[in-house]
Image (cartoon, rainbow, N blue to C red; front, side, top):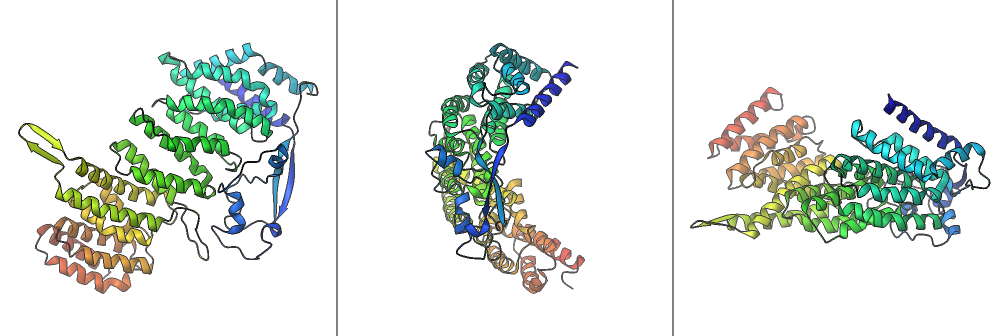
Length: 512
């Protein structure tokens, strides 16, 4: 009952802050001002939408520059086309001062300026969290966002003092709850500072950056999800140029060479993934992330490699070429996958030449070069799977060129992940050029000297045809000859799969 009343009180404070928030000043920008040199727009990267990205962004040095900057917080602006009139809030807001503050606003202000009240409030939040809370409290986040938006820097000193106490809590029972509350407060601070002046923001971030550095250096499995949510809610629906300080902080996590343990390494990449909230508007940063992460594909720790595979697939997910559109600023998926294919070919050769383990007497020696090659192969499989999860247009021509190696890996690292990665290709809608190239690759794979490779190629054909039944009809003669050829294969396992594939073709009417 007490918890319910407390939650209702938080929501009431949040609502009051929303009612009392100072009005915004709106400006308008005409699309004619952006498209003065052309009347045509196409989806994707264009000269007229470069200014809304983070590329080459120079932070304003004066308050006037800051106020005059046009920030567009929604990601959809400018990608396809521009509205006729863009209405956006000026980066300036009237603020209540202590002297001119209305009485109904002063009630909240005076209460949250009371250090004793803040201390007891946060202590209760921690205790209340222990009993009922298990996730990031969005209602509480909105309350703090409203408080910092309305009252600005006046509240910061008291709350920063409490935040430092929270993250240094050593009591096991309170540790998780303290970090949960701290993450909510920091997210509210950052989000509430959206329309602060440049001087106020500089003062805020001078205090937050050292605090976040300490947090990220001492993350734990119990607290990671809360700080991930903190970053997410702090940046959600905001122009990346407005959040350049937090983006630059995340960039330092990428470049951090000091790894205390595997968990902290994976934690950093977990936080880097929160940048996906900015989508296509941080292309230069995606290029930086891609360049750094691709050198870690053979990292010795599996947990890190899994994150690297995920991060790389995200960095390539914005390389989308829509009709009459272009993608010129993001990492090129085809170039990247082709480079991976070359490295994968070398890794397979190394692994086949050098045994992973050499047993001499009672000693078992692990060949480090073979170990790195195996790590690389496993990461590529993960990456290939993730790219189909993240990319809006995953079927690239380079994926087809990579496919034979995914079949060849069956004799080296057979696994469920490898099977799934091939099935993602089969279950995708394949356009004619891609389908033709894939069938050529399948014909080549079926001539491989490794029977495992030929077997999985036959299994793949089943799924590819059944998932592309109508657009694959014009290739039924080629595929039938390929299956018939495998019916006479020297390996029983290949013949068995070929017979099942052929019967499936007859049953679904693909061939008569």
